[in-house]
Length: 197
Image (cartoon, rainbow, N blue to C red; front, side, top):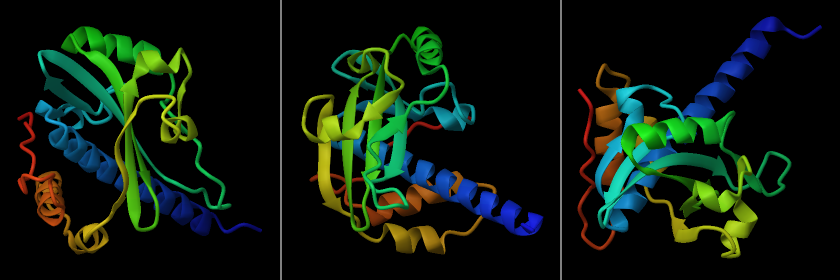
């Protein structure tokens, strides 16, 4: 007999792990955008939790972008490469709505976490040719998207995440603490992220 309590606890732990990984991925995505000179970066999830398709909005050289951020572990529990990052159900339909609302090109950013390093890949939704997943092996080989960061060493992130306390302003504290723990490009400055009231 399977204990219902253990099953629920395991599901809650997995949901919590995925949520934390997603939030961390969004912060690394913001860092990648700042390092690559994008401006007017907005975390759309602060406006509406689980904003359809996009997590971030950014501008560069007169163009606007909505970005779906997908953060995953490089390897699955069975030690096989986590080769595809799903964009979610109805990704293209949701992207079209967000594109219209923000007059912005739909893009994706894949953050691949290994034990001590991370890599970041960036590309347009159009490049995926209707496929509903980001093919990480093709990204790593340079066939789809571009590599914004490759095997960068993680510094202090785990320590900072463990020390964070829950509060009404948790997302603001989280962003500030993670920003302080990471080196932001050659400028040494943390990104400015617009917040919706």
